[in-house]
Image (cartoon, rainbow, N blue to C red; front, side, top):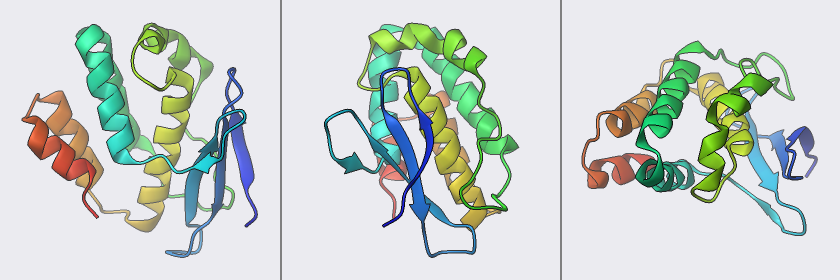
Length: 154
């Protein structure tokens, strides 16, 4: 499989994509932490990490979720492979850096993988609303069962 590196975080995590087969510009997001195997980030990983961050800094976590909702509403389907980031900027890392102290994932990693996953989903399902509803549920403090169920839907 041929991977394209989209970004390498300050801590050395490579964020990669490779061709998918759902549409002309479909791609699958992967990552590789230093010294580890390539993995695929999933919605449930992000949700669990958000819960961990929320337990320690609810205000900043909810601002991050608001930012995620903005990303979902703002990204466009990819018209090229490999895809390009459309929204990410270094200032976003600075805004949410306080969340690095909690959970499993660093904010730089979360911002980039989240944006890529949303671009991928807009590419394949331009009218889809599942992710928007998932993060709105989290934002509205709906019950954990509904949120985890939505995050693991296939």
